[in-house]
Image (cartoon, rainbow, N blue to C red; front, top):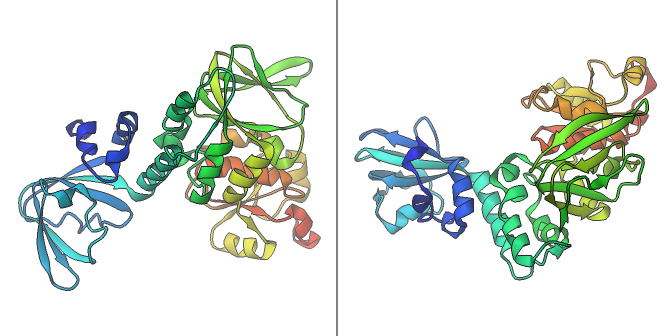
Length: 358
């Protein structure tokens, strides 16, 4: 259906007209085109709420809550803006001819506009390391790691708008080369990394041999576990190709990205959520889990939490816990980045009466 669209159509709409051609091409994948026959109400089954809807072709009759009626035509200046955003509440609509509508998720569109406005602001001065120029970083901020996909489901999807400008000023772009070791197992954590381009490999020393744990590609992130849990690096990440990384210092990461994504909850409030359908998620090692788990808890150790993405249901809220809250905070951050509804039990099992542990 989106074959009907091209970026020239999107570029005529507001506030989409401010996007670069690359951004417009990204947005195409998130646009939904809908044909409506004359006489039908296009919003009877699919309401306007939560969407920006544009009239691309035909005529619509809009009936407002106060009884006023107006006719909206696709070739009018009015049609460049989403239907119903700045007008009084719409009570009903009717297609006066065969109509073509474009629907875009409100939250995604707003995030894209917000990031783009921040990225183009004169006060934004990203840090540049070897191999970079300010122009290159600005292009980077409008694509790659800050793509529509990552703004919709990735690490920036839930970042408060107030933190965006700060993050863009503090993020550092660095050029890296094949075989560069970015983080080393056993070292202190100092940065959070985001892969703008290139590929990397995650390994861990097991029995004197390097065990490959994962392959990372553009759009992936790494390095957060040691920063959140305040422990040493538990794996080594080595570049498999040349590339570009974005990185944030530990303190900037904790301030700007960790806290907004982590929702800490008391044991009393957590119990109420479990009654309403939430599930306890024990992120400790299996022997710990078997020794004193909470009733009904499932066990996904922190070192396996990334493998659980796509397996755990996104329809279920989770309450992550460990002994103290450190490991569960790291696990919750990883899951929250992936779009899960997850809470952290404040102070972990230390806050739970012994009699309630199995």
